[in-house]
Image (cartoon, rainbow, N blue to C red; front, side, top):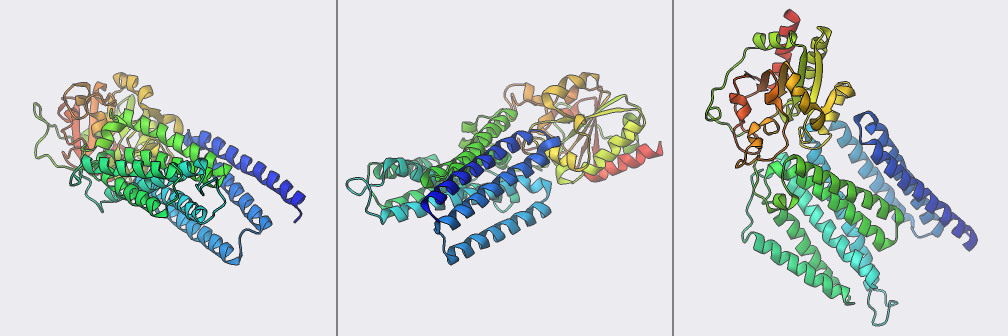
Length: 479
């Protein structure tokens, strides 16, 4: 191909890359609503296909990839695409946070490998500025990519392991604690400055890699399982930043734009989740909050009596109410009871009951998680109401039906001196009557009893969420 034709092709490919980047932005915007999220996902995937296709055409035109390289590229696409398709079709919605964490690890690790490979290649070339130094505009993003990508890789694996139960969800103290983490940070900083001063040293780069990988472990291990979704979101932001740095390393516009989008959206999501739990990101990284859920309390909260409720009594309350607000929580997601709650809601609506759903930002562990779960069961989008929108409605609700939600409904959040103090909650206790479907008096992630359970207006229907809803459906049909 002539130089003129190659230059024209490069210009066309850059326009294709720009179109792909625009698809990323538009796709991300459409993911803001469950009604358009599927199309947004497809649009973003189309943008990635454009970016990959344009890059492949450019590689072929330049002759920069031999037969072996093309075999490796195609094998990687087939293997990665196959695994992605398999996990997308088989993963349970409750396992989505840990899957996202694994994706973060892969993304961060891949970005770090790009920088490592480029640095090793450049270190063997003697055509740089005087003294053979790697230019600062290359060295800075290279080191940042390696550091952020390595931290993301090991940190995401630990986070995923905690959510999967492979690693205990409780905070695991690292010997030496924060001193070890601080020492690792100092090692990384000193080594980075050494390279940025113009020194070319592959061994020093590997010191940075080792320290960063260890830092990812020591940072995430002391954080409790309750905060893992927030940590995953933070590491997702790290992944995007690492990818953007990789784009600067190899001068690829698509990587820079895509990485910046992921980094920015991940940072926003992290802030939203931290606010929903009334926890600062710094406080979360410091660790020590909550282990896992399911700590069983032998008795109810102090200062009150827990009132057990039968299925028939609960069905009567629901069937003859005018306004019912359903509050789904993580227990509903674990029990895969989304179809049961939709069936119950449809039965009530057929009897003239007005039904809506109160969605807390972290109801399904991650923002939007519960919305997607309920949308999967064909719950109408207009019935899914966010916390700020639905809270004033509880005062007019005849019945609030809580299914597997715990800390996000605890009135203790309005009082100082508790682990959930200041946490935004759903005002379930403002409803005229409250029904809670729960397997036991187990505590939530915060490790404290829920004061809602001893409210005189609350009746506890002890059952698995799926079975409890099935029993309610049968009881309402029998009325």
